[in-house]
Image (cartoon, rainbow, N blue to C red; front, side, top):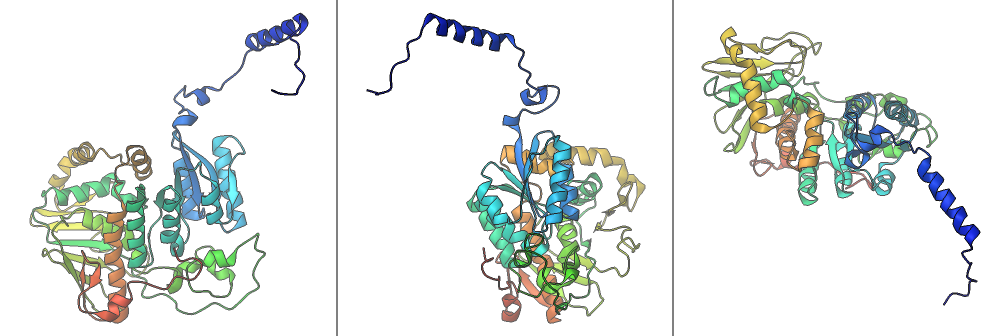
Length: 441
């Protein structure tokens, strides 16, 4: 029994409570239509709650696209640079019409605290892609990660295994797999309309090696402005220099990749047009510096990792523009690249089925011609994305194997199923790099 004196419900108190209740019913209570899911809006309970990690140039573009999805709500952004955190928050708040977007400087804190976040965009520098994806998936998040998805084969395997173990949806940013012109070229090869494809070209834009030196040491900015140790993450430590910021890291071996920078797109595009189910090995032929690399799949298809000097938009003999792929068969060829008003083919007659080829693809796969939308649709359906971990891993392994071939300056044979080089211990040691504590996965 409570020792609190009982309050008698007098007639006056009863009438007062009744009047207050009546006034509450009588006064209009406004609930926005968007909160109820009317007027084309999606109710909050049905929205996918999103967070962003690493919101620089590409990240801000991706985030802007995601914010345009009616069923997506971004609640938090994370970046080691204070200026980028502020810019990303402004982007989100202005789009969503409030000031609710939270900011974080450390992705580990963000992932631990934001249990409400269902999906994350990861657009950090390359060195963080794999580890950030693994940490996010372990925290129960579905992941859209920009390419290249990993610096090493070991990191790529870590992503695949984590996605499988935690049953996470993962999409890598090979967005041309969801663009009509590229889909048409891929489907022309896959469907047999070109005959048995014998040669595939992928625009890899080799950078002829990456820098192995350090920039001169400069005074570190305050940690609140930039956490330098966190910026480096799993890579070997080096002193701060502002030249690493704003994509300056892109030119250094410890922080980036070579072939995979472009090949993460185009090798995935090339493989999508081939039947890879029975392909067991790929042979890499070292042709010397500044030379295009020819590789040979065990099914007899020649995959050419094309090297173009000069501007990324410089015309070559197989396509013009950037991120191109081309499929050659006995019945003709089909190609696509950025900046095309339509795919290019060996004969105008091949374009006659353009709409049918693309519509057949969408009917068969039930995928939209929108890479970001495919990610969010798969979050709801829990089926694999078009650029799922296995697609990412296979294409990245080929790119990274080409890098190793270039570094060792000799021919190599790679077992795609075992993800190892055949009879070459030195090459196999290069499938991984040491990851600096405490950023070790």
